[in-house]
Image (cartoon, rainbow, N blue to C red; front, side):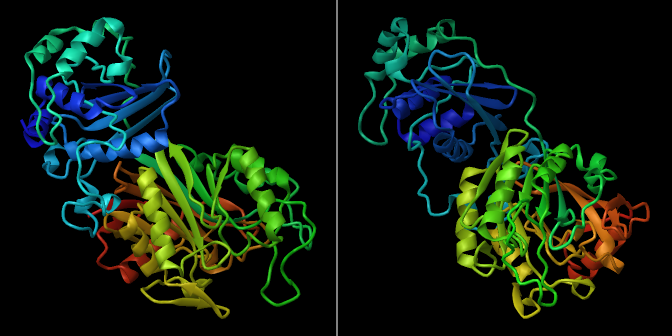
Length: 528
């Protein structure tokens, strides 16, 4: 029987043909791999004498399992552990979305394949372009046993009592590529109760989340002690009025537009007009940790206010309290939200960060990130500034002679390359939002904290907490604009007048009249 008929039967759940197919795939591998299905899940347990490499295994598993399209299986959970241990060292989960399956058969919260929502080659998602289709994993690490029992798939690691029947079942394999015979001994192997000789299966944890929630805010300048002392007596005031609204997210993001350092020398000539250098005490890092920030962007025009020493100190102080930073040149931040692998990439208009003017470099970074994470978030610090720059269009922007990029073109480019969410900041005012290829773009989140540093005139005081829910493919499920207003002191407070909601709704209608979303008066982002 050829590989294609076997694959067809495997998709239908024929246990014997799956066992034969798995034997062929894994006959030369050195991993102990067990699989089973349960309630729409495919469980995969990887064991070896050393801890299996999740970064090497999971992307390959994800790609091949999605391609096989097993009937009745909606998502996979992969465990990695050393042989002989009972507790997994790592666990990763991902959706299995078949490109040829009707929408009605998809699990709640899992949309059809990204190939249906992105500009891509026929039958290829952007995350698999350039790969030739193949059944066998590069590591040959998976197999299927759909009867509910775990299948032990590596011959060399079988218990002694089962090595002989497995070997007998393998003797009938024809080594010719594409051909395989099923010996009678395979029937005897199928009747053997392998589960009796295996340790108990790993229990399925809580159901895989249909969505993950990300909350994001814009520019944060928590006062400054340079060149003058502009710090509050009680720094808890920065977030005290909005802390409760930053909670209840799987991941919280902000743009930190300052440095945390005691380094005394600024890299800027602040004697020139409209040139500012911000510096805050290193102890402020704990303020961000206490209110739940997980990732802070440092790719902006103030990250180098105190040169490389100031930037290095900032990253170190945040990392010391468990907050990760994004924005270093040529770097991708890999993290997790509710066990889902997420990648962040920070861009600005400056060469010492990843530049939004370098489209080829941006596409390469995004493509790499999309191979190693389920969700890719792009942070961009770009665009002109001020109340005269609230509107956005597909054009180049400038500010004080600087090229501030074409953020519409850039945002759409990175989404075409594999990004799932774009978070813009820098203009100091809120801007429109857009749904492009089912992915949300927020062109500017405005100011969030600017204690005695940022102007709060007119719309410069309009702020927000953006709440975004995306599914396993990164497609927008729902969203919300939580309205915030900055007082004259630059401290954020929840805005019962919903001013930023009205502003963003009007800007979205004006700048992107055809985008398939609406914003309610209460700030709900609804897909049309």
